[in-house]
Length: 46
Image (cartoon, rainbow, N blue to C red; front, side, top):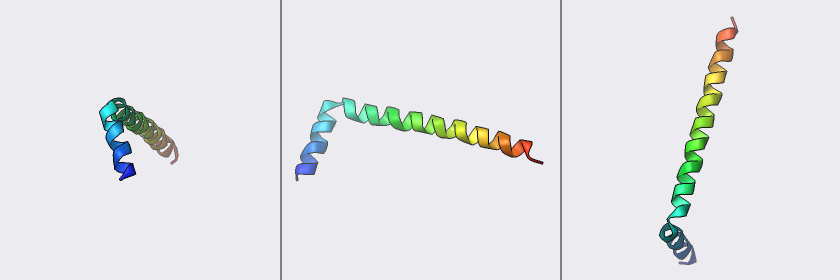
């Protein structure tokens, strides 16, 4: 029950979910960049 209260307060704050979303978006971007570099390296190798 304590955990539910904490999650509820986070939702009420409104900033926490946005922060989480921004974090995941930046993480996806980094992953994409990493994947692109990996593909370029694989292309170089005959």
